[in-house]
Length: 150
Image (cartoon, rainbow, N blue to C red; front, top):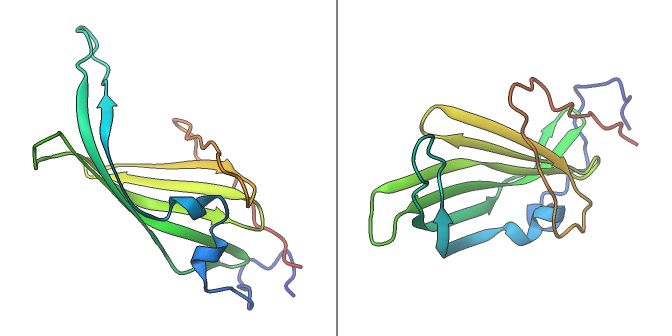
């Protein structure tokens, strides 16, 4: 048992089996590929160009992540997108999907090799089959809460 004001002590009873502790992220784990995708990027002065693409995404479980009383279970992911029949990268993205069982917080971190990063935040119940995340331009915090430990 820890004092709720104690931001340093990590839980001592961490279940190391990530796959059974992913909550709403459980069904996302694995390797996925889609070949019927369509990108319609906005163009300021011209009609948008419709671009088909093939997406490959791998979502692999990571070890539980404790930070003081916070405990996250998650998936490390890599998304790689090419145009059909081509090998040159159209889009590449890496990051983490994290779920915090104590609060229901869901976080996605995104990094792309053009020097851009994003963190999107939402909430979901352990058995949720859908959820929504949001990232607000200019926000400096998503008010992630530190749960009190029993």
